[in-house]
Length: 277
Ligand code: FE
Ligand code: FE
Ligand code: ZN
Image (cartoon, rainbow, N blue to C red; front, side):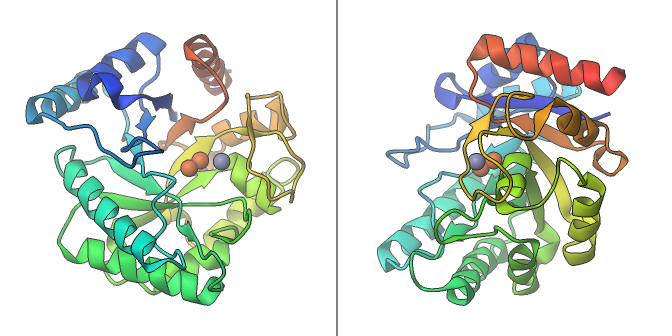
């Protein structure tokens, strides 16, 4: 089995997200740790976080997958943006310490003109700094579509970041099916080969979460536009194979499809039917 859920809003608090996912019928979820525009975090009362943790235990949820802000760029050419990103990462991970056993995913960054090598080094330095403080949460680098100067559009770039980070024991990967497809990996016709490549370059033991999305664009487009399951270029058959893939069992799968409540409830149920069939 896999765990399935979607992105929720933290606006009404942490425990409320657990209740919402129970109502949606899923057993994991993701949330943006900050308002994407302002970069602000919602103040969290310890009691609210504890209530979420006990809801997750009671309902036997899989690991939750918090999502760092899109504005957090550890390898921006702008030193102020880089400094802000390091602060955001530290604060987000401090918060995650109150939800032990869960995961924190973020977009590695965009080098904005400095070049891939420099970008990789700065991301690794940011992670080294954040993990040196003894924080326990497993931090996931997301596979990216390779849009603009984004780092993480190839498995080799992600490997290079892991290689430069001591305490890499606290690092993993979140594979986004739309991004990997847009980056050029053929998840539709040859998922086994993509996962074999992932295993050879990064190691499947590093794979800790999946973002389950269809794509609005063809393979290799480097666009990053998500689509509802079965309505994009990946299509239902390919997504079904991914959900059922033996190498991916036990992982949390997060929907980031363009849906409101009703659509998410429908997709969660659909994925559960794929699992059972
Ligand atoms: Fe993401
Ligand atoms: Fe994603
Ligand atoms: Zn995306």
